[in-house]
Image 1: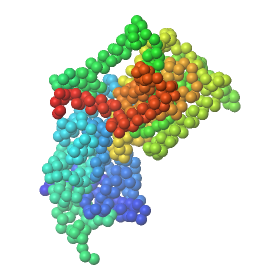
Image 2: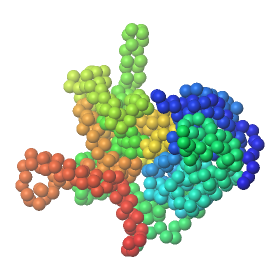
Image 3: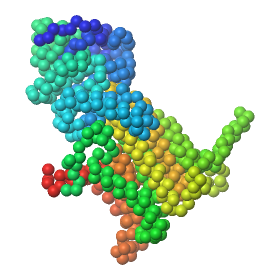
Image 4: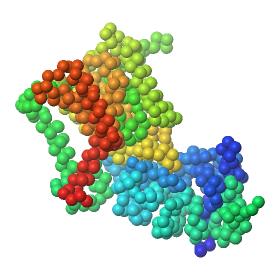
Length: 261
Length: 375
């Protein structure tokens, strides 16, 4: 087990509340994510984990509270602004572009980095072609890193689930994010696929220095991977700390196992 | 055995990203272009069958080329960006009438402001491209609802464009230069000092337009913008989260698509029809274009050509075959038969292969690569 880094704070969530009509998905949740760490968000089903990620990357707008990312505080923003700010994301249910090849999916992740306008792209000559090739090089590095060389030209709809998850991670990595949000990266995977994915997550963190926030239900994975863990239950934060601290927390044990009221 | 890519190694990404990475495809394309640019004019020049009369050129090849161009435009919007449109006929009309106005001189009397805007008649190539530009502007305006509405509801919004422009070009006499019959004649087709008059000249002109636009469109759809369009089509939420702005992606798709459709409309009016009335660009035209794209293959430039060929040539074939077989059928029966066979063929195709001919061709190619082995 590695010790949590004591880097500066990359993202600070302060008193965020989110309600859908009468349903309170998040209630006054505060926590921070430090630069370079792997931060896990766990909790039983319906605890508000995915809602929390959606608030962070601007897909939901919180009713109360503020989010400070890279020193800039704001209550809400649009998803593409979050993307421009350096937040990338994968989804619980794979959200790939089904009609495109694995390569094109990952290339799409480079959109924000590509500068040539419509007319240049139309000619696809000189600077436009050079740009396309330059980004292809970066994407090929990611493909190499994720070991998906053999399937790069395959339409993603034809790929097995585990590989789709990997392509989705590749697309997020292509954005060269400062903060990578992973929503259940190992859901529905077998042991071997989980081991592969864990290796990729650790490598991303070490190799690219990317800060990662992940939601995961497999406790063994969470405890091994993450530096610090936030526990949500019914939209409320019930614990926050290192995996060892969280494991011993009575509130967390109660939330997971249930207690007699 | 012929169609095999073994031994064709690519050593640069540029080679790997070529339009036709496989050598056999490139050879086939070169042969096709050779026939289209050199073979057809030669045959026509020596009056060799089937070019003895102008029929093939004027009634089949010319409309095929122009409608294939329009189908490319529709395919960019419907096939690549996933925005359904029923208004492509209207955008062809905008291209045609704008080109007509620019070609015959624009005069907008603004008496209440005390002056008038007057543009002298512009050369035909400029008029045609300006026609495309006007269609692109209209496309952007009518594309704005797509930011809020999707699918069938968007189709209804574009249908509104169709009926609106049908009405405008029929009822606002300014667009037809106050022609009493409502029908207008295209200006003389002078291209950079060359007069385009004979069928073979018209054919070559359209062929050049179609080839250039097909290459430009192909470049766009395999570049960054094309990936943005497809991302919006496949999953707009995920697209937004990787930094694609739906506003930019959708409106560029509307603009590029309408531009190409507008140019096709101008060509249709100037080169194919010569003189026309608003009926030439009715809802039937929109539906015909949509069928071409769906049957040819959504999201495929090549599919646009195949679809256009199928939709245009099938009715002609259905007309010819009974006559050739010596079965005497009345004209009415033939027309009805045409509808029945056409409709059932489309249904059958869509059930067997919802992705159209383009997918059938790519499946065929995959099989060919392995032939004669099953895998």
